[in-house]
Image (spheres, rainbow, N blue to C red):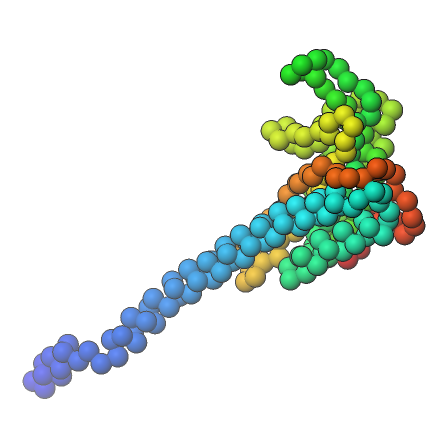
Length: 218
């Protein structure tokens, strides 16, 4: 007979209810929190990869009068410094290409094609996979033929105009997860940027200690 009053008291007793509810919802809240943190980190990584590409291309294009290997090394080092927090040196790759017209054209008007050549190309970063390779040609492409009408993907191609040159940057990064790779994986992030060279009389790269694209190091 005493069982019924005991059950009644248990029914009315709400002590510890909040703790039980918290314990039940904690796994869901934790998963959402971790997913949110990983998504935010991926977004920041994408933004930083874009920043590295734009900064590298812009800084290389700003070098005036002439350019040498030391100038390019400083530009590439600056790109790695931008990505230092996400371990870009070991997980990323920068490809800088100096592109200018090779003197050949075809068509006219809106159909005019100004063929290009890659005068020089320098790289840095330890990432070595298919995506991190120069996607539009290596140093010397287009010098003796019309194999390079433009740089860039098919939906956003760009070419230097006659009498000018441009720096084209390709940046690739193997995403480093903040929490775990099981949440979003480790996608390859890639960005491209191009800037027209300003106030430079020669595109011949002088000096020693070249950052050759056959070397992969942080």
